[in-house]
Length: 94
Image (cartoon, rainbow, N blue to C red):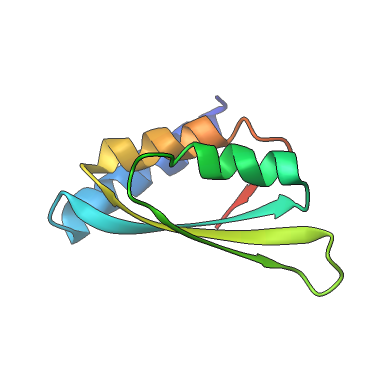
């Protein structure tokens, strides 16, 4: 992981620690190239977690927005999911 990413995740963890009582609901938002395989990778990362997942294709159908609302146990768990999903090719975390 590069220095910029490390600093981003560190700051995110600090902000989440300061602004929520854990465990807490967290809303992940991702943009992925429209591909059943890539969307499934994102959905599978939240399998058996009781997540509510919504997908919406872009106007031209090239990209798909994936929103995941899920209860996470602590800020580190939130960061760990972002790091895990950063391996999906072409994913953008919002």
